[in-house]
Length: 340
Image (cartoon, rainbow, N blue to C red):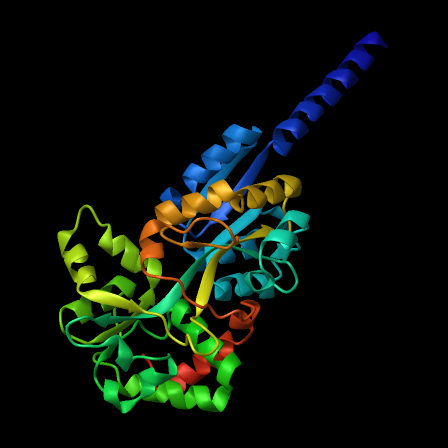
């Protein structure tokens, strides 16, 4: 009898230790590169004692992995860029609501999913960059103006498969409707200086080299070019360009987010909530600005001095859930207009 009781006790203690160990970790699937998230995860572990396990890959690859893993997925937190990608995870039924009073009280509603299935961690603006020696800022006004014939063969922008551009078009659909957006995309495509290729940095470099006069890109790419310690050519190209904030007399400049969500089948849900709340702390928000050159989602957090030097701007407060909801229509419009 004593031997039996001792054996049962040993099993229970072992199970308890196993559960406690399991409860002291959180597994992250991140589409952000390791150097853009790992330092924060290490700090989180140091402060909480919760171990973080990080897997990084392209967003679509991670989503496919979570679908295939189903209930057996080890993922607790999913991190990616662009509300459109977060919407894909939502549509695939991979997420669960983030139950956090802290988040609902501190993060503006338009930067959160309408069903609380994801929350923005940092903001980036998709803006117009112009060649300072060929374009005067008073010639620019809005995204809509990019379809004007005055910009014929003068614009560089990434391809239609790029989620950032899809979200920009989706925001236009929300603001102007499908018919007007279709006309705008058609006009924009006619004004392209070249067939779309490369990333955002390539558009800025092309404009600096005289292949076009205007480039559309995200602000953090420009900031990284200006501060590139290894590639002088990138710095020189960026210095030939300047930022213009579109639609300041209307709805405001289009913004998007990097964001986080909790896996529907998370085994460490409480730890997942704690991690996301940590990533939204003032300290973490400040780190994002200093290292990633992104704007904070929390009001009152200091903006990176470089970003601050570009001046304040009015941002579009469209709920970013709409970018995902309108993505399919945006892609159809882009394809019909011949945006490659």
